[in-house]
Image 1: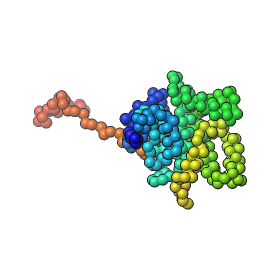
Image 2: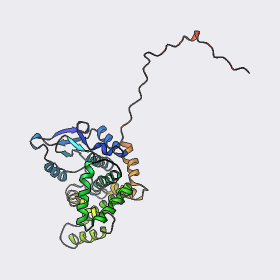
Image 3: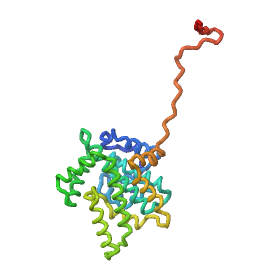
Length: 295
């Protein structure tokens, strides 16, 4: 059986209340609704198979044609934001098949925004299923990189203290790592695995390096090698955007201004108030002239 296609307004959005104070979330959601972005939902025979949906999403994640795979007719609010960033990357860096740099930039922005949401939610009261799943997974990844509990707690405090700064540090780290890994030739020689090992050692010096392996970098690189558009100027737009983000005071504000705002749907036109029941005006000939002020 084929996928069923549906738009965001036909889906149940989970954990949306937790993001009610994140201004960008509402804008990202509005863009997907206005653009009539379509999701693919697994058929009834595979309904609820998160493992199947995950496999398909990791294998077919090109942002240019949309169609993220869902296990059922519901979607977590953080995934709405993640999908919207991919969609905006495709609009800004397309049209057509995206270059490796464009693929990496879109994924780096979407993935770093996940950490931004963690930082925003850590300072709020109330439970969030997003935090309940993300923080333990981050802790496991950090522990694998040699970070102890106290050090991981300090890392979370850093994220919560300035989520926007954490976003940019992780975004630039992911883009840098993906581009460098892509440049390796894929062999086990000095230009392949040896070169990759050296560049990972350099990335280890970055503040959020303990979280690097939380992200599917190998999948990004392999997908870009197979499906990324190639050509002398294909990476130009993505590299220019990366440079602009690095140079901006707050990169999320740059994205909100350059990517989000231009794609927001126009507000509905104001309707004229109904004249029904309004007091009738006097005919012009019977109106009393206003009293003139005494000199």
